[in-house]
Image 1 (cartoon, rainbow, N blue to C red):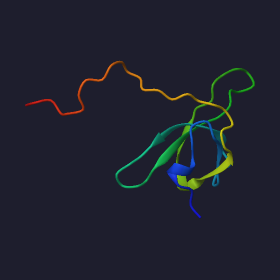
Image 2 (tube, one colour):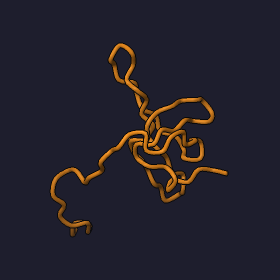
Image 3 (cartoon, rainbow, N blue to C red):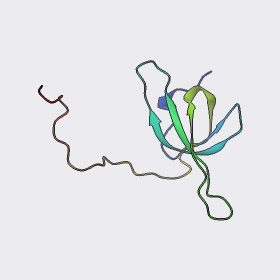
Length: 88
């Protein structure tokens, strides 16, 4: 059965079933077409350098460990005005 975007949370450890890539979910993208994706961020390399996270279709990931780390989510970017489009 395919994984659903609602089944994967921020901080979950997942693996890509095709490549074996493993990491922590740090972002989600929901698309109108339904091709939802998660950003999987791998651990820091042994030399201290950051490895690049990769986007995967949610159906390709397997939940390895729910809530491996706790990530507090909050809105960013400063105060919001209106979500309405500007007048032309």
